[in-house]
Amino acid sequence: MASFLNVNSDNGQVSALKTFDFETLKTFKFQIVASDSGTPSHSSNVTVNVFLLDQNDNPPVILHPVSTNSSAEGVEEVPRNVPAGHLVTKVRAYDADIGYNGWLLFSLQEVSDHSLFGLDRYTGQIRTLRSFTETDEAQHKLVILVKDNGNVSLSATATVVVKLVEPKEAIAASDVKSAATDMGDSGVTFYLMITLASVSTLFLISIIVLIAMQCSKTTDISSKYLPETNYDGTLCHSIQYRSGEKRYMLVGPRMSIGSTIVPGSNGNTLVVPDRRSTSAETESLVRQSFCVIDARCFVI
Image (cartoon, rainbow, N blue to C red; front, side, top):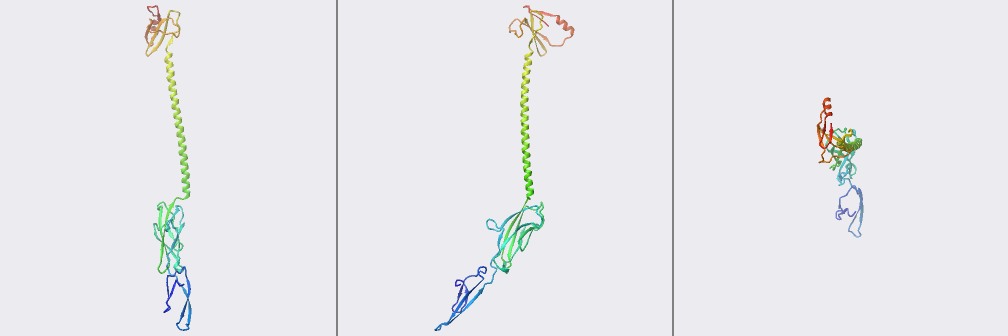
């Protein structure tokens, strides 16, 4: 104990060399020896028992909440559908002082809405006072003051941020709805692809039909030029064809089917208007015959 105490050899006064800590040293004892200067010297001793009294020398220490940087801050997520009386969190603190000085009291020093949260002053539990509504803010800040019961009170503060979140049921329903929406989008894309393929197929079929119609028209035009085969043994032969409102007849010597008249030959061409005639006019025309210089003839 020589490091803690000093005894004055002249008057016997005992003094402390350093501060005592009740939490680490509650009691100790030491012995004092008093002797005279005679010869022989006589002495006497006494044992001193020292009992330390506790002083409020330790402030409260926050155990929860504690953030990563060791500050007394925390975030709590609470579903919006919790009822009144729901336990949000519990602030835990410790005071190294013993006895009355170590008793701790909790109080709300700052809160965004006093109607939402309540704090138990002895346990540090934070509970909801009512159900949440749609008009309540999504985030609330609470500052909790923790103080001891010493004659000179020491205190500490903790900050709790409460975030309101959607309940798990709503989140699950939202996930199912999102999945259904994705499936619906996939179905729409599939039907759009089918529609596009159908339109493309119809377009190709239309092109093929138009090409076929053009080819058939060409065949019809070539079939107009047909030789006249019902001649009666005369020396004349005719080929008839139409063009607009006029009818043309090529006459010449008897030719085989499929033969042609060479341009520049001495054949003859008759142009006759294509109009409907009465029966009398038809008989008159039938009786008419035309003869050409080179003995070729044609009959209408």
